[in-house]
Length: 224
Image (cartoon, rainbow, N blue to C red; front, side, top):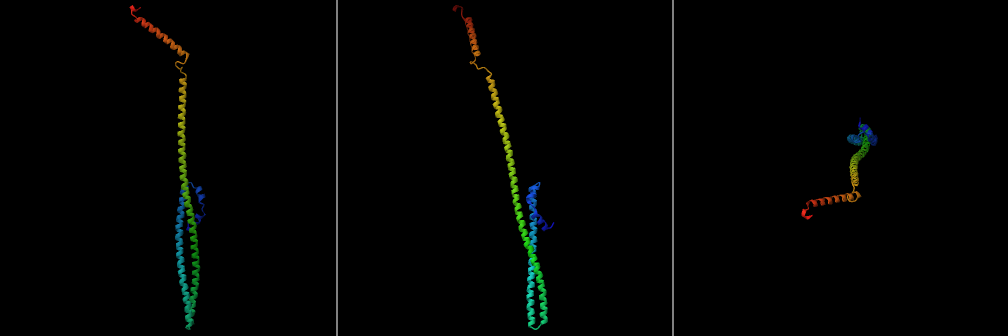
């Protein structure tokens, strides 16, 4: 593919559309930037070569123009000396150089037009390269932000999971306390129920009876 064909393809390309269709946008944009940079180098080299050719043509044309002026002076000198034959030959050379100067002028004009076009192309390509590099920077930022958002979301999910576990543990502890309270509520409170008070009275009578019996067994016969 020629340099100008590549240049036209690059300029005609829609960077956004290509990135949207690419499976790996970052890789695609790197390839596009590399292609643009390589084409830019070739365009600059081509432009420099064309400028050198223009310089050569200009120098050659100036040389021929000087020769035309000299032949004109010689023709006048020959006529002044009565040498019409030499004047004629000088004018013939002047005519030849004039034709050569006109041809060189046309070549130089075409060469300068190529340089102007090449400089315009360089400006367009440099502008598109700059814009593409800016898109690359934005693309990298978007990817970095996406990574950060993904990490933040994962952290949030983990935090939500930890919170769910904590809430479950609190609920479990609450249920256990409720179960414990229910167990305690099923046990009669000592000294508060009628049953417990009678039980205490009966126990007290038994203790007194046993105490009296023990006292009687231990009493001395003389004390009766």
